[in-house]
Image (cartoon, rainbow, N blue to C red; front, top):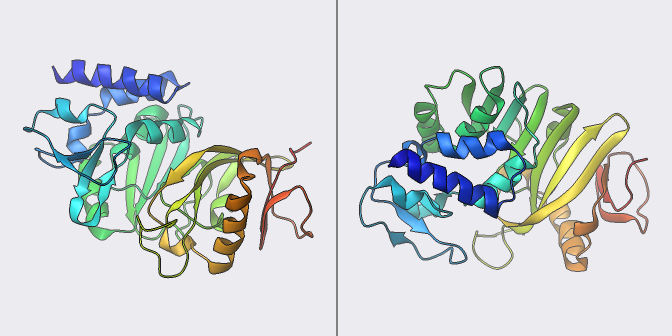
Length: 288
């Protein structure tokens, strides 16, 4: 029954997220979600309602094989994220068998395991988690996977080496040079840019709201494109007040859906600069 529930779940997520990767759909069918959530019954959230938890009737895993968020720590509103959203962002990484991928903000490790399934035994996944309790949970839950390591630390400062894929699963006000420099030629970074004014609390006002972008390192620079809107907890080491200000202006203009490239050279702001910050600029002009 569990295998049948996971198969139906994988088909549902594949359809809702319009997944292109057959290996990713297979991962959702093969990886037992309950192994990363703690014992049931569970507290779940059903989009679009993301604030009122409901309790599952019992500990039957069928309850969590749906497009729902599941509480890891309801008191702190820390959840195992919405499968269709995470699936779409992972799909944007274009992971291939044998790739090395970094999962910054790996939580309890479920989506880390999903990516490990996609890259296979010849690939490798490094999960980084700032919260010590979650990092310990992830390390225990992922111990059976030889192609995964978990680092308890700050993804904003931990040097992972060169990666094929880099998934930042926490919000930043700007792309960190460390993350961009970590990309191999052809490497892909999926990054949430969010608002985080001083004194913010997640769930209040615009805190944590922004856009998910895909950045790819090419021979002549970086391509970039809009993936989706997002609301997410912050990566505390990747927040800057000036970056928040210029991001606010860009979000108000509504132009980030037209992003085509990322520039890192020093230049004056021009009409093609959709988000012009210190050391980075998202442009509406594609690379030639």
